[in-house]
Image (cartoon, rainbow, N blue to C red; front, side, top):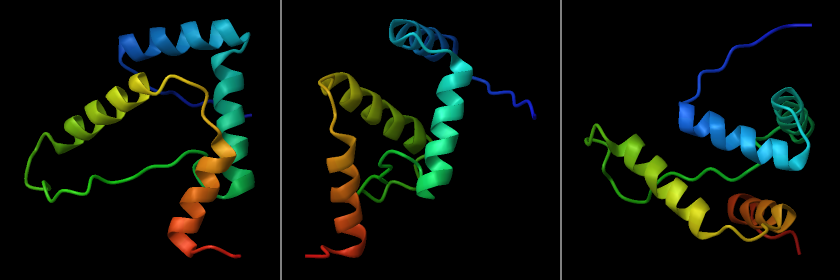
Length: 98
């Protein structure tokens, strides 16, 4: 068995801890589940999109993108249908199979 080390900001670590505690999960179970899902599906188990604007020259573009992602996550706190999200992403990438 291998060991990995991950650095997280304190606030993100605490938020993750609280969420996993509420779910009755450990961080190890969380990361193992994430990794197994990624390996099984051969993709990251959520949608990652690049911003549509051409702000590559801006050194803060990554931080701004993260801030927009975090704001979106907080604004959409209702349950997410991951199967529907994944299907929509696959249709966008490869087209509809119908």
